[in-house]
Image (cartoon, rainbow, N blue to C red; front, side, top):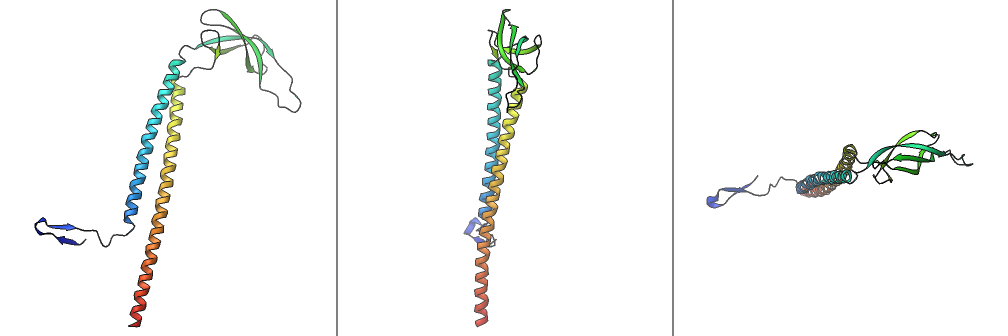
Length: 195
């Protein structure tokens, strides 16, 4: 590194004449990749928190759901239609008592071959309507884990692609610089031969 004296301030450094011209591109590319990684990790955390909040909100909204045991009253089993696969479910009439003690009847899909008199678990809203299974802390945890894994996968893919682009640009720039250097050396070599 060349030092230039500047009076009483002492020596200060100037740009290194031995530094590669593509070094700046490497530094900028590396810094950009680090920023992409940090942004991706922050995004992953934010998405995970949003998924957790959504799951907890769904759990609270579905807190009034009630699990009841239903009795299969009758099952409608149709023979398979020609050219169609045999269905795995059949419509059945079921009865259950809800939280309020009233008896309700509805039609529902049950596994094919379920005989009348069988019992199965159903979820109700406490007002006699059948609803889907309630969300639990486990389903919220699975939802958060899948969201975080997906966001991390996207982050890694973007950083890997960015790294490949930076490496490609660095190689291209080095090759151009090397070509220029070889041409300059060849010109110097031929001029030395003529003297």
